[in-house]
Length: 224
Image 1: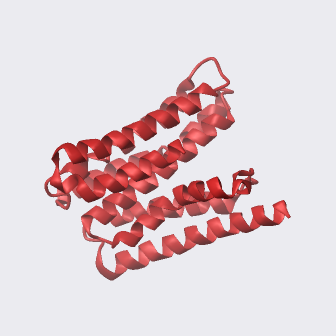
Image 2: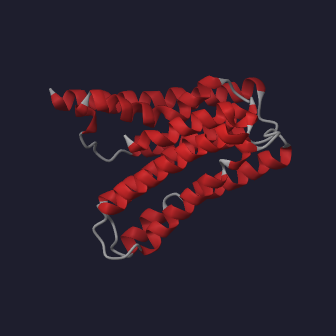
Image 3: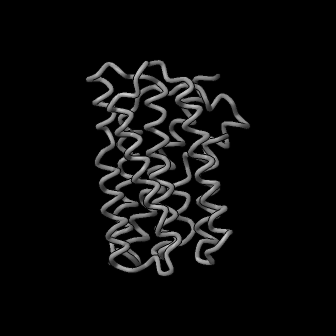
């Protein structure tokens, strides 16, 4: 349930941050609480005696994602220089994905909890970007679905525990994740708006929905 603290806090932030003051502070506190809760749960189960460079890279990606929250408190989150800054930071965080896994294998620090931390970092990046795209007015509120599908799945799994069963490795799943983040980064680029932005967001959302539906169908059949 701790994983749900981040998206709930971000939704609140995107709605009330333009008003500033205590409400915005409370919403970002919810984000911080969710992040801390997730981190504590992860590292309590970490099997190795040292953190390792691989996890430092993942933590660095998480730190970059946190910096992306700042524009939600800006008086005008649609300025071009701010938009380019968002694009640059998001691209860097995205480019670092995969490096942590490679380092974990090279240094014999591979762990299930480390892989989960990496996955949740990817999910957080996607959701933060979807909130920023929504806040900029580039795409309507439905773009939040593109960033929140992972969290919707987590919530659904609370009612349907069989969704928590392990899934096999999937190139399709990894590819769609790349498409999701790449599409959201493109949507932060100044000048990408109107119909092209709608098409990009819709195509990525449909692809992600198809990927999740495929996994749910596989789990349903495996359960039978």
